[in-house]
Image (cartoon, rainbow, N blue to C red; front, side, top):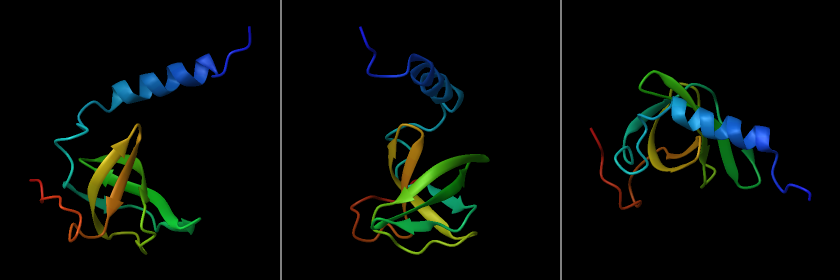
Length: 98
């Protein structure tokens, strides 16, 4: 029987999720983060890395906004080990989190 998923990759992803338990999927929405790389644009979205509470996270900006290294962004969602960010909370319906 063929496996649809690589069991080693699945285990690694699960393990990596356990290493970053502080980022709560709901409580951290609206939290400020810092871009630690300039985001690259591809296929209508941009992606890069952000620092949240001293840890680096893969990030994407779904509206394709230009985000440069050092810019402040806001967490608007989380999908596994990737956070979705926006340069502004205006129009998102999300309130700023402390």
